Length: 345
Ligand code: 3MF
Ligand code: MG
Image 1 (cartoon, rainbow, N blue to C red):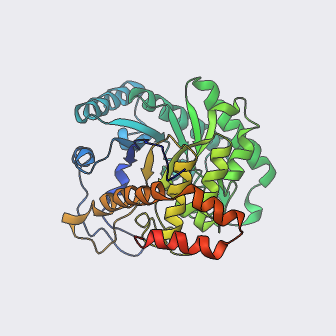
Image 2: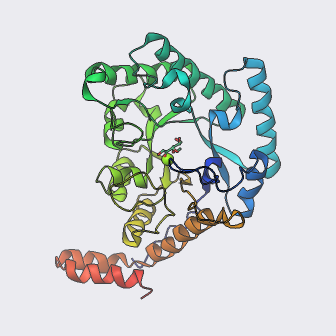
């Protein structure tokens, strides 16, 4: 078999937070905030098909009454329809609220745990209003700064209880865990996609619980994103991705896809293509702080282009050749074959 016969058309998505002011923990904004509606108008121009939202991207006044929430969400749905966009995922932004500073589902406070679940149900309602049934849980603060702060065994059970409550609340949603080993916490309770998939089988409906895998998060855990994705594909649980890049074990960088390690990015694309991945190609990338306002969407266009160019490379790989190298255990030869492909050979 020469190359890949798959002619799958990938769909691309990103969240509005990918267009940002450049503020970081050490300095204030360096670009003006782009209005939400203006961000939405950028998608099609950049070649993207859909959006990824947090609940409060859609409804900034997230603690307002249900009627007001519904009204605002309906407006956003209209905006999406007007642009020909769909909403791929919706995520409760639990980590910014004053009631969840010590985590939501795993907080030691029963009132805060209740808020986290109620807020997540609100997120599901907002998702329904914008036509989205994929609920992403990035469990940002479900962990600790010091080991002794919470009971780690109880914490796992509490996360499972929270997921069950959401599965019960709406029989049509799917839950996608987005695992990250650290930041903002010293240590997360579910640090990798494998951890999240482990608990998925202990929920009331495992077939509705899967993962979104972010390249940088796997790298931060010392793992290879393509192997993490392959593992989830084998389980039939890879339902979304956040492609980006990360230069070693430091703060979460969200660099443009393929900008640090081209070979790692190639392996990511190759695995998605070989594995028949049919979810969206989501990006979670940040413009550099030094980027001028006129260029503040370039990292998105560049990441998309890198995916498509690496897809061409992946599709040009001669599977028979790869098998022959493997059969001979000629990994030196296989390595040069892959490097040659990446250098345009
Ligand atoms: C943090 C992240 C998050 C999630 C987002 C949607 C702000 O490292 O990756 O981005 O992707 O909250 O789940
Ligand atoms: Mg992410």
